[in-house]
Amino acid sequence: MIVCSCNMITSQDVAEAVSALRTEDPLVVLTPGLIYRQLGKRPSCGSCLPLITELMVAYDQGGPSSSAPFPHRPPVENT
Image (cartoon, rainbow, N blue to C red; front, side, top):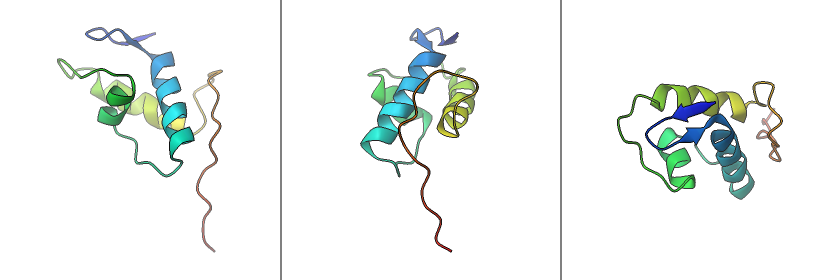
């Protein structure tokens, strides 16, 4: 699915960016801007930012029925 038609970013691109960022640093704070930087792109009109945010959060929490690998583990809670 095309998420950003200005930059031709797909939902798979977002999933791969989330996975790569989590592999590099499991505690990184994900933002749409960080996803764009990971993909080597910049937002143009910005109308895709809400969808990228929604997908980014969904993929970060385990993926919305996607086959994208998620090699990171959630942070351990101190009890």
